[in-house]
Length: 382
Image (cartoon, rainbow, N blue to C red; front, side):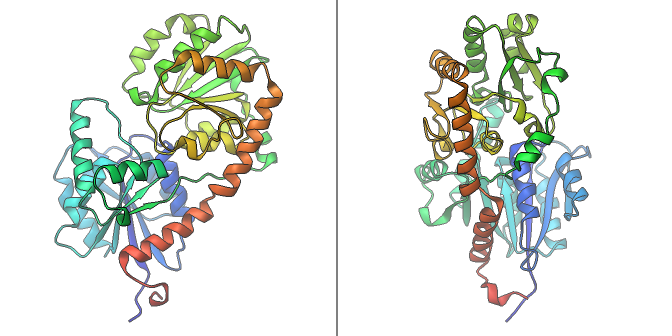
């Protein structure tokens, strides 16, 4: 019996419009709307405006705001279930621990099937660590999980999740044209009052322990003694801001380091960055690396999580062990003294993401997964 399009809802807990939110929005834009009807849902804690929902509405994507008192309001389960009923959903796709946990209880007793997207876990505080522990236990009971990298798949298998319930669908990136890259020259050095001819080494990510920003600052302290014309830019917000600001005080006062905070659409500034550094201790598949490579920027990154699946050491970027500021400084220093190698790595990285991380390929994999989990053949949809 043929039926209408499959109805899918993606549920996201959105504190700001970062890498995962970009992925979800781009996935929505590339969805096959002849087969699927999509609703993008997110929590509006205390009724506050949600940036992801605003971006989605501006692009004509159907949205649903799940009102909550706060981040730990378990009454959200009832409201999510109401949204499932009102939208007559077939599939609920949840992202990160809060939607995963609340979605698990919301779909119980219904015919809606849940797919969880697993990117990674942080360790901000004991409360968050508890919810991550709970998330890992509940993932074992879900129908299906999307891992953003092969490394994440292996981690999930290590938690006791059967391999047949895990599908690897890597993050994707839009490849800007050469002309677009030049047109996005937004004068980053002028924005932060930096010397126009300085070399710029940047890092971007949530200011939390697992991102390794303290190692980035230690690296900057080593390199600023070696190079007079190098400046360091740290982009992001998070619980470690105060600590990082204190640790980098001398570099900030000398205008060698800029703590830029959260910068909307930071990828537009990447054409002016000489080297993108990712010093994380853990990763799923970092969007910022994909974005840097899409603009042919040289990348130096720690060999953690799914990073090795993007960066081939010495070919599409440079890999270092996590937690070693001196080795990180040595590799960045080597690139700063070899601009030809810097360009070569950037170009090879751009070519790699163009061939392996397109949104069209990602959309095809998601389509196959949705039909599989919903147990509906393509020919059975109108």
